[in-house]
Amino acid sequence: MDANTEYRLGDRMVRRIGFGAMQLAGPGVFGPPADRAASLAVLRAALAAGVDHIDTADLYGPRIVNELIREALAPYPAGLTIVSKVGARRGPAGEWIEDKAPEALRRQVADTCAALGVDRLDIVNMRFWGDGHGAAEGPVEAEIAVLAALQAEGVIGHIGVSNVTAAQVAAARRVAPIICVQNQYNLAHRGDDALIDALAAEGIAYVPFFPLGGFTPLQSAALETVAARLGATPMQVALAWLLQRSPNILLIPGTRSTAHLAENMAAGAIILDEAARAALDGIAATPPAHS
Image 1 (cartoon, rainbow, N blue to C red):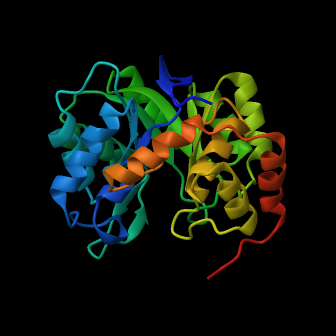
Image 2 (image 1 turned 90 degrees about the horizontal axis):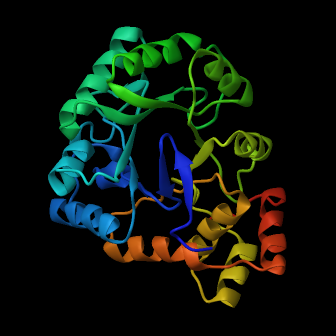
């Protein structure tokens, strides 16, 4: 599968391998990066490699990552889609604090626009808190209504949802069109299999966060075996599996390194044969190894 294979995201077709900007902040996604020049370089290298959608949030830093994006990439190319998220804020020690009152959401959108240097955000994901990195049922309509009002005002282009259940996606869609869902999903965390297929049938993009395991990177003997046979890294194979899992999956792997960026982009050219896919599909049924 070629990295240039595209899927619709809002009113644009984007390449299925994008870039997640979270790692460009300091430790714990808080404070400035250790090497500002390297962060700017990887952003520019991402666009040079064909990336045309970037996932970010004013939570990252906070604000620092969006300022890096602006410094590195503004004026933004016409074909670049920037996806942000709202629904939380950072505490003085870097705490992640749910913050989804209507005035808070409006402020977060305004702050994101200011940091990026834009008047309008392409896509805003409403990030629900759930139990941290896992979705939990609860009402979503009030928050989506705030974003729908901002959309009507021309401040945001499209609305997505993050960390949600299938029922919450359905509830959100009754309030406003939803063009993407961003949930935790990877080779070992397969709880959204049915949701991915349902969204694909509706032409809605699914964007897995923690595609490589997040703060606990994927570890699997089966993954390592397949990767060795294909002459690829385990993480490249994990990304390739996601691309071949469903055509509506868009990837946003992040990195601070241009070399790692090139490895991530190369995952789009890896073809998994039937034996490889069978071995990888079995990972979810086996508890991941821990070091």
